[in-house]
Image 1 (cartoon, one colour):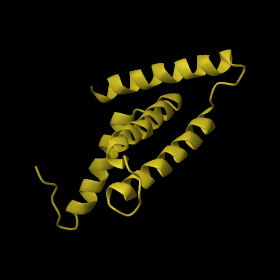
Image 2 (cartoon, helix red, strand yellow; image 1 turned 45 degrees about the vertical axis):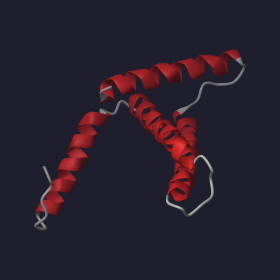
Image 3 (tube, one colour; image 1 turned 30 degrees about the vertical axis):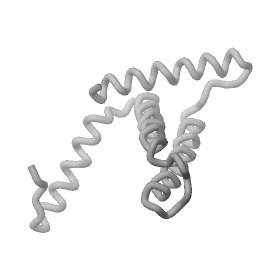
Image 4 (tube, rainbow, N blue to C red; image 1 turned 180 degrees about the vertical axis):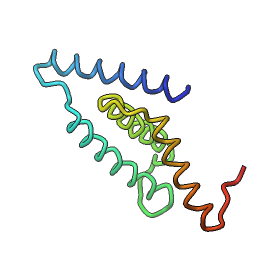
Length: 111
């Protein structure tokens, strides 16, 4: 799946969550709610990374790692959509800036 397809899928799932929450008598998640959920997912990811690296005990950490990375990606994609950010363009701009910065110091990106 390319980034655009991932983003469309993420937004569709977010809309389903919004409808579910509203039907249950709760408010749809705001961008602030999404950001707080993302922070929680990043914390969960950090714990799993520590476990996979042998720094913590979580019995199924390796199996859960991909899911948690996908949770984090989902949040980033939905936040980008809600704020109208072209994530692919921003990623390209950001990585080009880093590459330029490193090349100015004599380092070259492989490939």
